[in-house]
Structures are given as C-alpha cells and as structure tokens.
Length: 192
Image 1 (cartoon, rainbow, N blue to C red):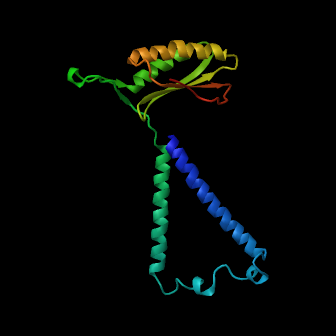
Image 2: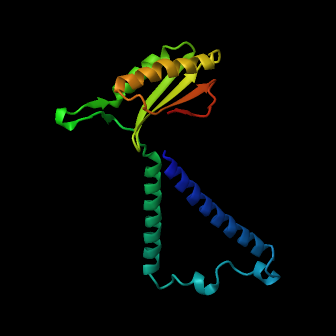
Image 3: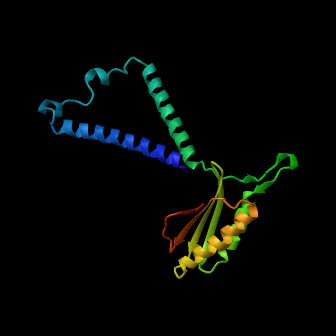
C-alpha cells in the first residue's frame, strides 16, 4: 500500500474515531445527568422525530439510498486497500527508434529469489517490482535463527543487488531489502 493511501487512511479513521468517541461521550454524559437530571430521563428521540417516517414512504427509500451510498464508498475504500503498484512488465526501452525492450517482472524476480535463497542462512525470499514514480525492487528475505545477519546482508548487497542492477543495466536502481530474522520484522533499508 502506498504512503499516500496510508496517510488518507490515518486521517479518515482518526476523524471517524473522534466523531464516534464524541457521540458516545455525549450520550454517556446525558445519561449520567451532566446536563441536568431531566435530560437523563428524556427519550433519545423526541416524539416528533420518532413518528416522522409514519405516512412518508419516501423516507425509507432515502435511508436505503444513503446506506447504499455508504456501502459503495466502503467498497471503493476496500478496493483501494487491495491495489498495489506491482507491475508484471518492465519497459527497458532506451531508444524507441532501435526497438522496444520489455522485461517480464516475474523473470527478474525469480532470478533474484533463486540467487538470494542460495545464501547460507536464508530460508525464504520474496521479490517484486513496483512501478510508482519509477521502478523499485522490493526483496523480503527470511532468515534462519542461526543466520549471520551481517554476512547475509553483505552478500545480498554485493552479489544479489549488484547482479540485479547489472542485469537491468541500471546501476542506480533502488532496491529495498527487508530482513526477517526468526519471524520478526526489522526496519527496511533502501539502497540508493
């Protein structure tokens, strides 16, 4: 998920949480008599409001429309959470007059995974290419408990990343390596 989506999620969920907290706090304060004892026994909805839908069939259609709109917005939000910037093809064309060069991302990631998993102490590797503001390779490496982390990191940087950059012809290709020793997450390190 992108950092922009993360920021939007934090803002929207924070505002929604604060709104619900304020409504709950107000309801609790009213029921405890904070605004006077008569408010504590007062009905939540006045008689006029509770009888408003009677004789107005359009009211329930309007409620259904609003709820449908909320459901559609929630579905759009869910789809935005599932969207990634992963790419399946990588355009490596440098000069369109001489032809086009397209690299399948799965071929690249398979080669990177095969090379990385051959390093002693590495138990699993997952690689993918993202295309957001330019190509970026993400490499998630799972380590055995007995792995020599500095040695694995050095081999990843000197062998795997160097071969990757040489293979695509881009010495400045950004690569993010995430090491996961013993199933625990560690901070990501981006190689510029």
